[in-house]
Length: 323
Image 1: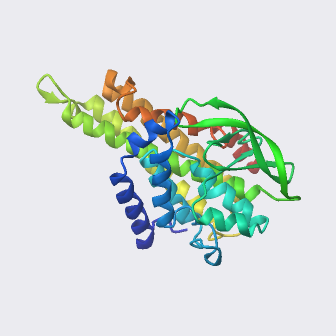
Image 2: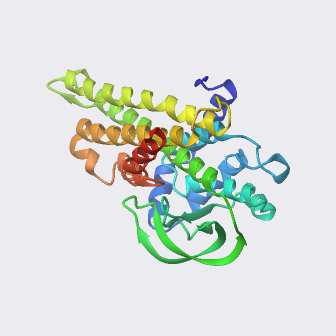
Image 3: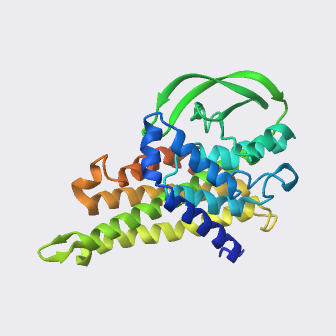
C-alpha cells in the first residue's frame, strides 16, 4: 500500500488550510460555544464552496465524487483549526448512510451545504449540534429523521449533544457499517490535526518563552516532550491513511477494513491525547486558561477521543478480529 498523499491531496489540504487561516476560527468557535452560530456557519459555507461537504457525494448530485482519502485530508485540516460543528457526521457518516438509502433529495441538499448530524448507538448514542444541522436517527436498521430532546453540554463547549427520537421514517433494512467506519476514521483524522496543532502551538511557545536567559525549547526535557509527540503523530498518520485506502478498496482482499479503522482511531486518539498533555506541561499555567487558543484544541481532543468509540472500544474491536 502507498501511504503518501498525491499532489492533488496536498493541494486540497492547502486550499482548506488557507481558507481557515483567514477565517479566524478561534473567534468563531468561541461564539459557537455561546450559541452564536453565524460566523461558524459562514466557515461551513466557505468549505462547501470548495467542495468539502460534498466529498463523498457523487458528481451528478452536486458532490465531488471523491473517496475516503480525500475525506481524511479534509477532516485533518478541520481538526488542525478546531472548526466547530458536526465534522465527522457531515463529512462522513450521513452522506454514506444517505448513499446507502438512495436518498437523492437529502444528498443534493447535503452537497449544497446543509450540515448534518446523527445518533447511531452504541458508538454515537447522541447527536451533536442539532440546533444547526439536519438531524437523523439510525436504530436497528431503520434510518429516520431525528427529533432532538434536551441538550447536554460536552466537555468541549463547542459541542452540544442531544438524545433523539424517531420522526419520519426514511428507509429500513439499512446497513450502517460503512457509515460507521467512515465516521470513526473522520474522527481519527480530526484528532491527528488537533494533535499537530497543539504540537505547533507548544513548540512556538517554547521558542518564545525564556527562562534563565534561554528559550525553554533549548532545554532537553522540553525537547523530549515535544519529540515524543512528533513520534506518536507520525506513527498514527500512516494508520489513518492506510485505513482510508482500505475504505476505498485499494488494499488486498484479506485486509479487514474494520480492524484498519479501529487501529487508526486508537493511534490517532492516543497521539492527540499525548499532544494535549505534553503541550500543557510545556506551556505551564497559561495552557490552562480558557483565554489561550490551545484550550479550544485540548477540550475538543478530550471530547473526540471518546467520540465514535473510545480507545478501549476500538481495542476490543481489534481483538475480536484477531480471534
